[in-house]
Image (cartoon, rainbow, N blue to C red; front, side, top):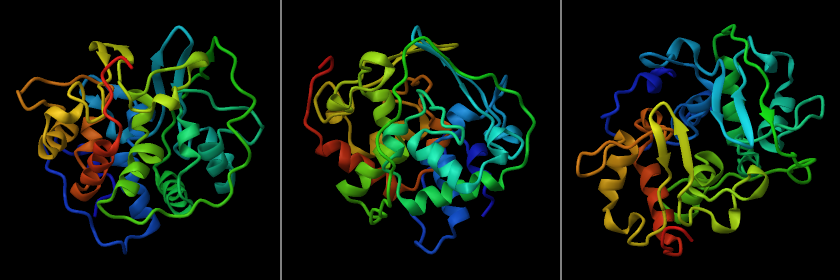
Length: 282
């Protein structure tokens, strides 16, 4: 399998069935980074024709809010992480702490990444280490809000969640891996998601070249996903097109999500259907 095939996937590609769980850590890491986690949605530069596949994860300016201006760093072997050990890179991803002790701020979803399993974290780091080195200078993010001293105590061992079309695995994919909560949960004070209302009603605004997009309600309320079938939701997630043919706007990473295995999509939807149905705006 070409580990870089997903960035070139057509937007209308159909999701494949899940492979046997005999993949290597590098293959698992490639799948997670390039599809569900969609790391390139922030870390890969965008040109006139879209994401620049030859500069995968080389960093770019992500978004600007009143609270902060976020730049995703170059995480190829030519970037600032080149001199970090694997353990230091894992700590940065899962605990938000760089080797020098400084904190990684939003929108990097560290509170969610704390629940990444040990095996998936190892796989992600293995894939990042395999990337071609791409020279690209990215400035540091600018924060106009106070950042916390940390995101919690050191994370110990996190077991793997058994794979399957289950609510539990869907919650894992939608939470720590895909970090859907980050965009589809209202933002609380100090620029962090209000996790008490996770996925509750959407409504978070994202300005960009497309105008202003508003995240959707992902609960099984009539304001949310209750109006669509599972197959319609899969089509929307993987193509960026609603059942009526109308397009959906970024920053939803449709070109990445086109490569998600169908079983994983159905697990995520099963989890979303299990949430309390809440109307938009609550």
